[in-house]
Each structure stands twice: as structure tokens, then as C-alpha cells.
Length: 139
Image: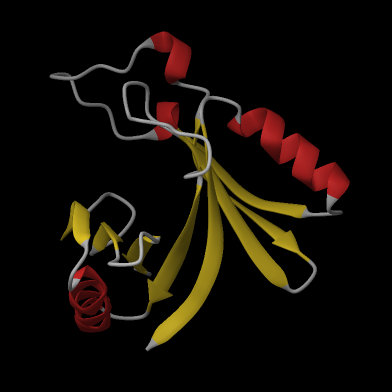
């Protein structure tokens, strides 16, 4: 079952600034913030010090709706006009796979569906209409 669908903003290193701005401008409540520095460390690929405060994922409550945002990881492409995606959260892995497989028909897989440290199944796909989707199993 799909548990929720949320707009997801992607910024290029200004996530902390955006959190403060949207909190004030939209009377939003900041529900959670995770930075890249809070990710599990990988000795093979240490994080540069300057990106550790970038927002990996944040969630705000705006009225009865959720707004999510993150910064890009340095080196990842960023183009104005493509900074909004839609995040779908499901309650089980099978539903995540079903939604992912349907959305990728005629589209492009940006990140294969895979286990991450925050989810048992997460992936990104741009559908045949050019819309970027992030599909995530709540775990």
C-alpha cells in the first residue's frame, strides 16, 4: 500500500538555508534533518569535510502536507528547472518494486531499486513524461 506522496526539492548546497527560509515563509515545522555527515562512514570513500553539513534528507510539515528536500551530492548534476521530484513511500518491499517497475516503463532508471541504510528498498526513476520519482519503502 502506498503510504504517502510528497513533493521533494533538490538544492545545490543551500539546503540548510532553504530549511530556515521555508520554515519562516511557510510556517513549517521541521520534522527531521539528516546531513551527509551523519551517513555511515565508508573508509574507501571518505566524505570531504565541506559537504558534511549538506542536507541529505529533510522533512517539513506545512499545514497538513509534507515537504521534503535535500542537497545534491557534490559532483552530481544539478540543473535549474529539474530540482523538484516526487517521493512515494510504501509500506512493503513488493509494493515498492511494483510501483518502481510500472514507472520505469518507457522511462529511465536513475538509481536501481536497492537496499540503503534508511530503507529496505529505494530507487529513482524518470518516467516517460520526464518526471523524476523517488520510491522508498518505509522500514
